[in-house]
Image 1: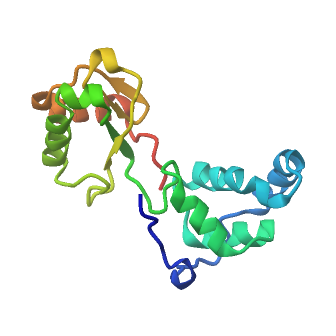
Image 2 (image 1 turned 135 degrees about the horizontal axis):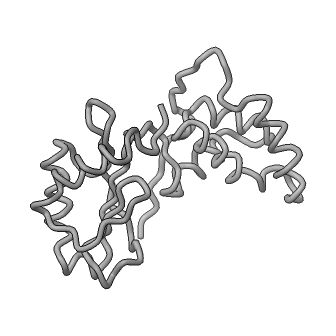
Length: 184
């Protein structure tokens, strides 16, 4: 496997007047999280989780603020955040569509389910609809191999998914679950 390099030092950061890493967040991290680690940099992942939980993603400005808070180079923060799939470095839609791509789901029609989602939403994997309602991604095993193909919409698991029912499933999910779990 080849290493993919990224030019973290040349990253352009959009800034807003108010910080993402608020004083309340810093106080909570200082009292609850930092004491668990011998060195402050050990708290990097919990800091990233704090920001993502609050905003639904991790803006560049927040990464700079985390670096300053922990006293580490900003490149370490972006490199860490971009390494883990669980961190969002751009905003996601109100509803997160996650199609399982494990071997069981692949054998049972995952590619057709993903294609049906792409067609229904008018986006590709990794993209968000223009109206900000849906983001489509593929995930590794959702632990529902016996009922493949499977997908998550927000935190709701759908099993034995049929491509022909995707459009209806997404509409019904949005009606029942409203605004979803994304943040804006």
